[in-house]
Image: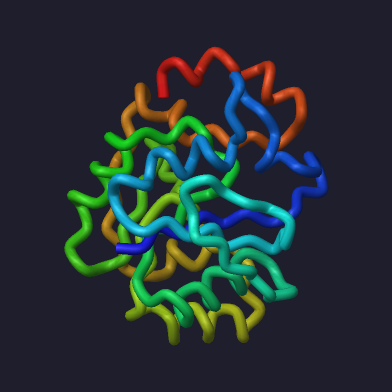
Length: 182
């Protein structure tokens, strides 16, 4: 299965995917957790972004993440989506989602019911439904995933930290101690 890392240019933290976290680039940290599991594709709107363990494919959509996911489904078929700003994921959490996959979309769900839309498996079978959702004005991946039948993978309290995103420059310092645990 292909792993598709989504990385757009950040307004809140320009260059965040190339930012250093404990001596490693964030995007390379993410890719390193995936490379032993399958083909890793960096699907990016930033033509300058590169990744050590990835095939780079330019995302030419002009819309939001739902548009990017739709075009990724068209381009790659079924894939495992991963946020490019989620450096604390582990091979174990990737394996947990893969073990739960039985042919239908599969996503981790937090104890409060929140679905992780950029850390899970999108299947070709939902292409038409996602396209119709977008055409009707739908913009939220979580909203879309809430409407369709998905395999829900419970996230334990201990696993919550793996899903932290780096969104601001101050997050580098704030979460630096987590890299030893991920």
